[in-house]
Image (cartoon, rainbow, N blue to C red):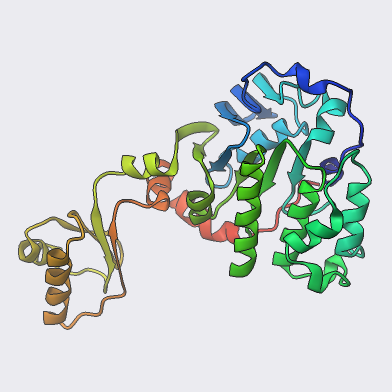
Amino acid sequence: MHGTRRCAPAGGPEGAGSVARVGAPAVEVEGLVVRHGSATAVDGISLSVAAGEVVALLGPNGAGKTSTVETLEGYRRPSDGHVRVLGLDPVADAAALLPRIGVMLQAGGVYPGIRPAEALHLFASYYADPADPEALLDRVGLRSVSGSTWRQLSGGEQQRLSLALALVGKPEVAFLDEPTAGVDPQGRQVVRRLVAELRDQGTAVLLTTHELEEAERSADRVVIVDHGKVVAAGTPAELMRSGGGEEIRFGAPPRLDTAALTAALDVTVTEASPGEYVVVAPGTPATVAALTAWLAEQNLPLADLRAGRHTLEDVFLRLTSGETAAAAAPAARGRRRSRR
C-alpha cells in the first residue's frame, strides 16, 4: 500500500548524504519518461529543486504530475531518463533515501481510528531524530482536536495532520500533494507558514497543486506540464510577465457591444469568454473611469473589475489545453485522491 511509504524506518546508512554531488540539486529529473502500458504519461520532463527552494508542479489532470512525483518517491521506475533525490536512486537506494524524505499524500495511509497525537508519536518512532510530536501538533493547529479520531476530523484538519506526518522525520526533501485542498483560510495560513519554515530550514519542497493562487504565493519557481511535457518554467513573476502587458478585466452581461466600447475607450476591448471582457490597456484611473462611465450610461452592471498584469492562472490556462485545463482546476479542488 503506497500510503505506508511516507513513514520510513530509522537509521539509514551512515554517510548516505555523501552520495550526492557537492552543489547538486536535491531533486534532479532529466528526460523522464513514464509509460503505463502503451500510454505515455510523462514524455521527457526535466526539472530540479535545490535545497531551500519551493517548486510548484502544475498541470491539468492527466498532465503527468502524479507519475513524475511517484517516480521521485520510488513508487515507479522510470521507463527512460534520469531521476535522483539527494543523489540517490529512489528505487535502488530506497533504504538510504526513505529516512531523509517526507511524503504528504492527499488521502490514505492513516488508520481511521487513530488520533492526531497518537499518529504523530507513531510516525516519530520510525525515525532516529524526529521532530517533537507534541510541538508539531501545536504548529499545525490541531491541539483542540487531539482527542478526535482521523475519521472525525474535517477534510482540512486531515490535510494538516497529513502535512505534519510528512514533516515529523525532519525531511531534507518534502513532496507535498495538494497541501491546501479542502483547507479553510485559517488552515491555509498554517500550511503557508510551514512551507516557508521548510524553505528557511534548507528543505527542498516539491508541491503539486491545482490552487494556482497558492503556487503564486508559496513557490520560488513554477513548472507547468501538459500532456507529459514541460510547457513553461520560471518564477511566478517571470511567468506572469510572459503573459503579456497590463490589462483590465471586468465582468458584465454577455455579448456587450465591444465595438462601441472600443470606440469609447480608444483601446481594444474583447469578450474573452461569455460575460468576461479584456481591455488591452494599463489600468489607469482615467481608463477605469471611462469604462465604468460607459457601463453606467448603458445601465449595465459591473460584476467584477481587475487591473494589472496577467495572473498565474491566466498564464496556466493559456499554456495548457484550453477547456480541459479550465475545467480541471475547480473540479480538482474537491477531489480526494489516494495512491493506494
